[in-house]
Amino acid sequence: MIVPIRLNPVAPKAYDIVIDSLPKLDFDTKVAIVTNPTVAALHLERVMASIEAPQIEVVEVPDGEEYKNMDTLLSILDSLFEKRFDRKSLLIALGGGVIGDMTGFAASIYQRGIDFIQIPTTLLSQVDASVGGKTGVNNRFGKNLIGSFYQPKAVYIDPDFLKTLPEREYAAGIAEIVKMAVMFDAEFFDFLEESDLKSPDNVERMIARSVSLKAEVVNMDEKEAGIRAVLNYGHTFGHVVENETSYSRYLHGEAVAIGMVMANMLAVELGLLSEEEAERVRRLLERNSLPTRYRIEDGEEFYEHFFLDKKSMNGKIKFILPGGSIGSHRIVEDLPKDVVMKVLDKMAGA
Image (tube, rainbow, N blue to C red; front, side, top):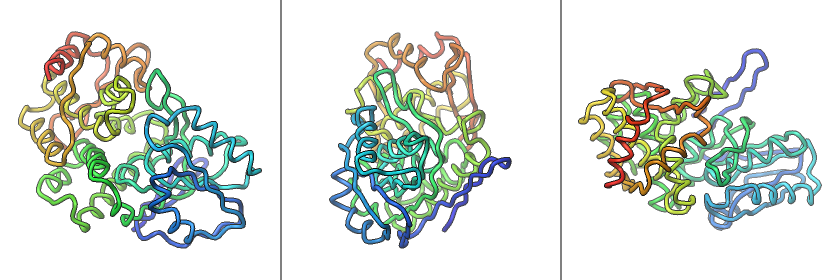
């Protein structure tokens, strides 16, 4: 299956997302595969065998969200300079969302921009992180606050990579799939409720539907000026959870799962979602081994973290919420602080 990305009709940027076995890839320039030791041990040999290029280098970086920072980014750039990569060279991101984000960011700034492609190896990166061109790193103020919009030349999604994925990582990817269904597709949510989400046939269907939904959104709004912000459902709360726990307690998808539950609590408070539908989402997440509770130690401090989020502008917090029912969405801004604090106070007793 091929899902096309077609951006900006004035100066077109087009590429394909290929959902199939990894094909043979032939390049006429230097190639650097950016990966981590865990992924390299599992998949590097196979990927190397699929690539033809005059020179192939491997750049390994440490494994984990806590290493998604400027120090690691600079180590990638240093490796490229040491190997004398030029503006015609190519990067390949082989790994999950952390690898994809950092590789894309490195490509966007190396000699003012070189090409890169994505070969995502986790469910989360296959259904979300590899699609759409968001790149970046974290810092002490928050998640992905340093980065760029930079589209890959292609994305190759091979479901076979998921066979070696730990159960916890797999569950983290389910969270992003649930996010897409809650925001855009009630029928898809029904399917997720009723199906074995580990069945190979269902996995391919989940990937294809999630990627298609995201591609539609990105095609309409590449740089998040409007509807693309809806893809941040669960992230406004989840990013604070990740920051408070130093990016080490939860995987990204786990934090998003907690964030979706908190966003739903706010939607219920505002009368945008019934308690029954909020409970449906919670049950689906818990059935797939995702956390839904987080104890907030200091509600005021948690609240202040919202203002460091990229989606907050002019002192206003932007919340992405279900818009009346599962399968719809609403962007809500400038809520009274006391309304938000009711949700945070409830989580203080979680």
